[in-house]
Amino acid sequence: MLWKNRQFTDSKQDNFRICKKIGKKVKTGVCFDFVAEALDQVDPKWRKRTKRFHKHDYIYGGRIKRKDLLPGDIIVFTWKSLTTNEHNSHACIIYSADKKGSIKVAEQNADGKAQSKTKVEIHNFDPTGEDIGIKIYKLRYYRPY
Image 1 (cartoon, rainbow, N blue to C red):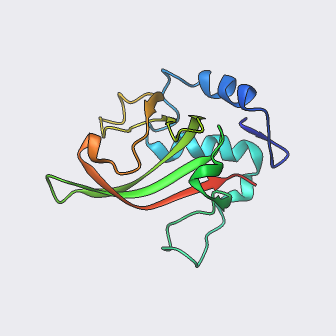
Image 2: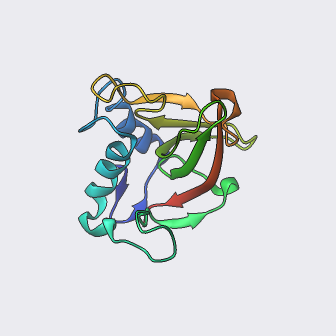
């Protein structure tokens, strides 16, 4: 569990819980499964839909600004490939964020591998996506309730 009683807990404790998942596949291997499993432990009713966004967007928590990110917060974005017409969305959990703006995320299926082979890994996060050949748009940050 990353969050306890809908309150953000100690970042070292959250990182310890994330570390237990590193190198393992969570459910089907899609990025959403990793984030959803953490949120399911907080409140199984979190999957309520919202009319403010596209009909498939979930309420992951309260919206926050990048400068306020802490381990355990969630990043959700839509992306488009810079070389093909491929586009999709992605969700991941903040592993660390420093005051200089450097962000590391815990995520699964980050590079679009076959879901049967994907595992939770820690990566540097580039909010532009250019370093991995994508353009990120609809970038949102959430603090779970």
